[in-house]
Length: 322
Ligand code: DGY
Image (tube, rainbow, N blue to C red; front, side, top):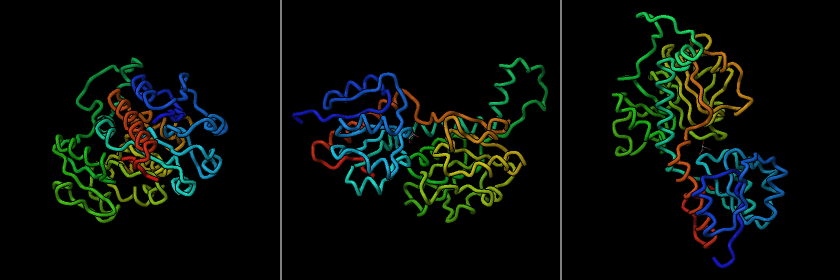
C-alpha cells in the first residue's frame, strides 16, 4: 500500500491496536471515546476509506445509503453484526467484516459466570455483604441451585456455544443443543441434538443463548417458549438482548415460571433496559462484558486490522459477512 488508506475508528481501541493500525493506515482516532451520533459519524466518514466501528454504532440502510462513496469497508470490532444492515451494505458494495473466534473463550467464561451467579444467587449475596445486611448464617441461608451434573441446553451451537459446552463438561453437565442443523459427530462430541427450540427448552436445567440476533431469532424466547421450561431452570444470555422478549422473561422470573436468569446483553442497553430486571433478586446482571478481557480486546483489534489489510490489498478478507 503506497498511500495509506484512511480508517475512521469510532471508539478508543487498545493502544497496541491503534499503533498496529497506524502501520498500514492513516487512522482517524477517537481518544476521548466519544459516542458518535449518526450525523457526526457521517461527517467524519467523509474523509475515510473505511470505518472500524463497534456494535455501539448503528448502520441501518438509511445510514449506509448516505455513506460517502469513498468508504469501501466496514471492518467491525465485534463478532455480532446486527448493528449493520448487511443487505444494504451489499447493495452499496461496501464490504463488511467481523471478528469471530477471538472472543469465544472470553464470552464462554462470562456464560459460565452467569450460570453460576444466577444459580448461586451471587447478586443477592453481594448486595447483602456490601449493604451490611448480612447478619446470620443458617442451613437455610442463601440456598441456591447447583449446576454440577445438570443438563445444559445450548441455543446456537456455533463457535461460542461449542466452547461453553467444553467448559461446562468440567462441571459434569450433559450437553443438549439446538441449531438449524445437527453438527457433525466430531464437533458435537456427545451433545444431544434437539430439532426444535421447544424440545431443547423442555429438557434442560440451564439454557445458554448463543444464536445471533437476526430476523429469524428476534423475540425467539417468548412467553410460549418460556412456559415450556421447568420452574427450576435457569436462562443465561451472552448473545444479544433481541433474542429474548423482555416482558415475557421478567414475567417468568417474577412468577416463578423459571428460577433465575443471568444476562449480559439487553434490549435497550445500556440505559433503557427493561426496568423489571433491576427489581428482580433472581436476575444476575452484567453490562455487556462478554468479550471484555485485555487479551480478547487486542485480538479483536488485530483481527479487524487483518481484514482491512486484505481488503486494501485487493484480497478477500478472512471474515467477510457482506
Ligand atoms: C461482539 O463482538 O459482538 C460483542 O458483543 C461486542 O460487540
